Length: 355
Ligand SMILES: Cc1cc2nc3c(=O)[nH]c(=O)nc-3n(C[C@H](O)[C@H](O)[C@H](O)COP(=O)(O)OP(=O)(O)OC[C@H]3O[C@@H](n4cnc5c(N)ncnc54)[C@H](O)[C@@H]3O)c2cc1C
Image (cartoon, rainbow, N blue to C red; front, top):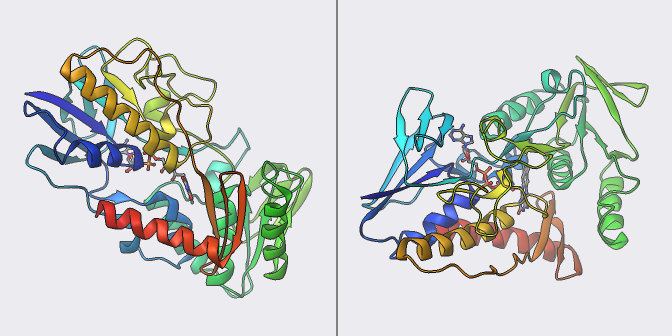
């Protein structure tokens, strides 16, 4: 029996299972899913877990069940391509015929001293829980710094504002205006929300050092009771250490069929894979659609198209607390309650489709 191993049950590999399991998996093939967690984690909602506005259970989805799917829960520590095996921390060896690596990403600290040691994170469920404990346990009137005003930083700052009205929240933005790569209308809407809700957005920031109880923006020392880092990501260490050709960010370079350059049985999906697009759940799912097509053709011995279709993304959506939001879809900016409802609707649909 052929064995497809899915390493990581994130957005990318969930989509692979969603497409293959109903009736697209050849009868002589089985799937083994490996994840450290016994459920699919809705990473796009980790900001709400950290802010204390969503419970743990609300942001989990069960993995699918199927007679030819085996789930193995454990920490993967090595991918040995020569022996075609994935090795887990407890010594288990999981052999594969085809492998899809979808292990996601972790924080990147850009060499800022103290950042890794003294900041909280929302990159894994366990870290988001620890961030929740820290933020929601702060005494009244404390000050929280959030470093990085991308989508996750914005969502965390606004959600925390709604969760703890007594806290002072400072959002450090490297850019001259928030979401500076998007239309000014969108930036203005988000900035106005922060002004109205008393979140201090500090533009043109450059955090140079973090120490217990303080950070340094350029040379200025700023006292803070807790700091959350949302200022960059990189693939997980296991993937960064793989013996394959990688891009400057440590992500394996993949062909248009999403396999690594020298091995057509090892695919990479999602945040781990080199791409011209910014990492997103949407991108991971689109890449997974392509991988499923390629796998099915290769299993049937068919010729692959000379040119795979381009990946097309729809845009993005973000929340500002539970009532307001923003979206940039098909070059159109949507703001306010409608954008928030759209985002909630998408989450509901995702859970409905997958759980
Ligand atoms: C706060 C926040 C908000 C976001 N909002 C959006 C949004 O609105 N829209 C959007 O499109 N994207 C958003 N993103 C980005 C999105 O979450 C990621 O791009 C997406 O999760 C990537 O999917 P993936 O399949 O690559 O990996 P992930 O979904 O990260 O899954 C990786 C899986 O691998 C497992 N794993 C990792 N290492 C190991 C190991 N060593 N052993 C075993 N298992 C392991 C993890 O448990 C996890 O299940 C957001 C991210 C954050 C942090």
